[in-house]
Amino acid sequence: MIRRETAGSYRELTNDQTEERSYSSDLAIENDAEEEYVNNEVLQDNNVGSTILSSIFGKACLKNTFSVILIFIYLLLMSVAVFLAYQTISDYREKLKHPVMSVSFQEVQKYDAPGIALYLGEAELLSCMHHFHDRVQFVVSPGHPGEIDCITEHVTYVDPYRNQTLKSALVIRGPQDVRKKELVFLQFHLNETEEDFSAIDYLLFSSFEEFLESPDKAQFMQDSERSYSVWTFSGGFRTWVKMSLVKTMEKDRSESVEFRQESTLVRYNDRRHGSDQSDQWFFVVFEWKDPFIQEVRDIITANQWNTIAILCGVFLALFKAAEFAKLSVKWMIKIKQRQQKRKTQELDQMS
Image 1 (cartoon, rainbow, N blue to C red):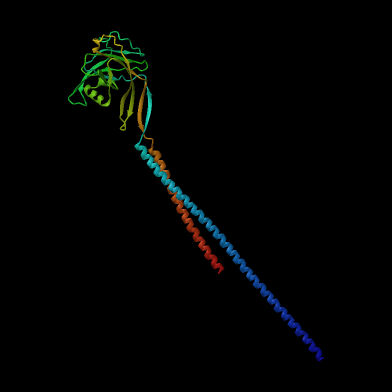
Image 2 (image 1 turned 30 degrees about the horizontal axis):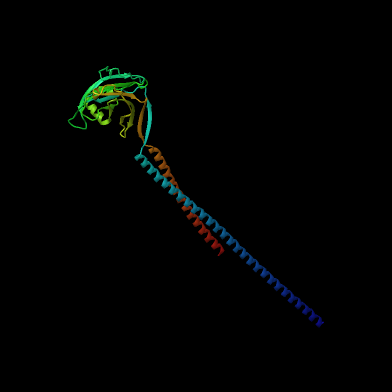
């Protein structure tokens, strides 16, 4: 009886030891599993954190790069706007200094009859006739007085360029009807002269009617001689003068008038004997060239309102560029603040 109980107890002890060993091994396995789980969790957390940090860093780099590019574009636009403003102001000042000459033509049916002032000296007016359609008749009796079918006026005045020197002028009404090609044919005679060249000076001014209506004709002729050029035609020739009128608008809005002439000389066939040729004969024809009056005026191509509009647009672009740059800088500062806040929060969570 005693041996059986001992054997039974021995078996129970061995069973208990075996169970303890299996239990301890199970505990060890569970501990190892828990440690592996914890390690895996830590590794996963570390991997997730590194992934989040890398993605945040990539987004921040992208946003910073985009912001820098925007600021560079704004600075480029501002520099272009400043250059355009400077160029616009420079062009406006240059155009003000150098206006463009504008030429236009005004067609007329009739001109105002010009005045022809002749400084005859010792010469004598033999005939004066108005003809039409370029039909100049033959000189029937050259060197002898003929018909004077022109309105004439004698004026004596003081030479505007030589004080105390009197000048005598014979003023004749010039042609008027340009459509009918009206012309004035004049013939003069000059006895022997002591000068080497025989010539008669003449002056054209714009309106014969203004001369007749002027209360002081001497002063009118002085002013005309200051304003217009004095021309000359020679003896022994027929001088054909074709006139054209040019009106110029001055800077002070006043209008000045000048004549442009095209002269043609034709030699007169003098059939007199040698002793009679000491007396000089003059023949001159005055006619309008065409029915167009040339009008010349200075035009400033720079429009001040266009320039002001361009400058307003440039300054508006500058203002917008500065505003955009300011907003982008604020945006960058906010992004950096958010990034720092996120980093601190993540570090707190990890710790």
